[in-house]
Image 1 (cartoon, rainbow, N blue to C red):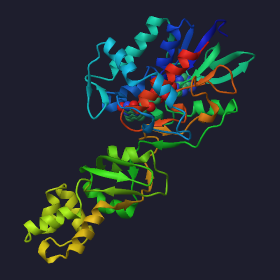
Image 2 (image 1 turned 45 degrees about the vertical axis):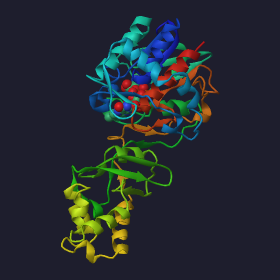
Image 3 (image 1 turned 45 degrees about the horizontal axis):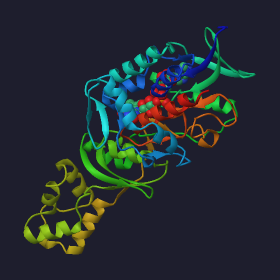
Image 4 (image 1 turned 180 degrees about the horizontal axis):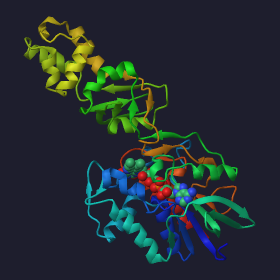
Length: 396
Ligand SMILES: Cc1cc2nc3c(=O)[nH]c(=O)nc-3n(C[C@H](O)[C@H](O)[C@H](O)COP(=O)(O)OP(=O)(O)OC[C@H]3O[C@@H](n4cnc5c(N)ncnc54)[C@H](O)[C@@H]3O)c2cc1C
């Protein structure tokens, strides 16, 4: 056994763990971080297509999902996107705002990992790679942390082990298991921000559209998003699908509006000005050609019939069909393709101010392992930074 007793031991060298290590060490705490992978922040490296959408300037509590919709407010308020941006600017990392508020690295996500590691090293935190934690116990007031080669002791333990997505780079349920061993409840977990697989009957018809992307409005009874949708050889993807997947359960349908900025009045006026044109001419000026061909075939719309030969009610019905396309996905593409895990350690068990378990002194949970999941757009990293900051600041 390593005879040193650390003030803080952190399991997991991803976004939340690295941030927590630097905050704790800056406050003078002896800090050890153990990471199972050969490198730190592997998810950061692959995030945002290699450019890491590291925060969202407009992050509010409305961008998050949890069994307790108030839990994350305090931590997010105390460490804002601008706090993280200050750090990025201090390191002179160039960034771009891609869509409203979404900040990405201009060059590479690697600069974010290097910045976090540098912050840890400068503050004196010990960082260890290739060291998977196998089990954790608590004896008197000390946590006993077992790895394959050594046992470590610490007064405080921060669990920053992330969730189940992408097992090849360390995704696992270790943090959930650890919570349960300490008799803390966990909520049901599911893959989220994930593409959908379609049922064979529909996929047979849409697979020819694979690669076609178009702006849509996607909605269910809980939420609505205006984003791009992408047809794939398995089903549906793109930001619209990833977003709605956070609010979708197996068996439920979602509705797609393929003409989000128009309504049936637009077709009626088009009919008045272009009575001799066909309906597909109207649609092709607004939607991808391949999609219009699929749609006309699906709805048995004639390519030769003139608009003047349709009644207004018929035209209204055909536009309404495009604006209310209901899909019942067969499944999601699962944790292999999910960006995040929805659910986690129950927020009932954790203090929203400190991230400490209410019933186990010195035990903290931060980042994705907690039942707080953000929408697509930099919100999940912002939760990782903010929850890590809350825990790091509160450890005595
Ligand atoms: C493809 C992809 C793209 C994404 N893009 C974005 C984006 O652009 N913006 C955004 O906000 N979010 C994005 N996300 C989500 C984001 O990556 C996560 O929300 C974030 O990484 C969670 O941080 P974390 O520290 O909690 O977990 P992680 O970053 O997953 O870190 C957990 C770490 O713990 C380690 N670990 C696990 N178990 C053990 C153990 N027993 N012993 C030692 N170490 C262990 C793991 O190896 C891992 O390094 C993306 C996710 C994916 C998969």
